[in-house]
Length: 136
Image 1 (cartoon, rainbow, N blue to C red):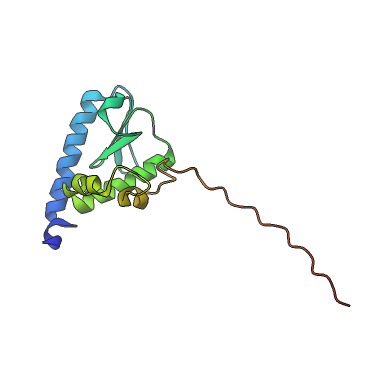
Image 2 (cartoon, one colour):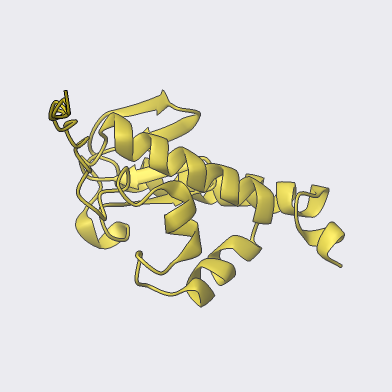
């Protein structure tokens, strides 16, 4: 059963259907620039009620108001791959994974920092080494 639904022609059809829905939804509500970036159709200028959180990935479409940094688009490109893998099972699996992005396995896989859920970690500077005292 798993082979039939995941990474299969069935999941591919679900991904294409979701992309078609995203294209229609984005075309209706987008008042901003529409472009293709990171393999996504990026629809800007949507009203806040028309997508979740800072933006939503539906198939190969990213729907948002203005949340389009390079990091966010990289995060959303991972969600696109998740759509390709799971097809129309993805919304159900995402729902079951929970609304808390820090616990949701799909958000964790996409990258919590790049998705804006965690602050970026700054590399810690190396501490200067203290010279060893010479016993002689």
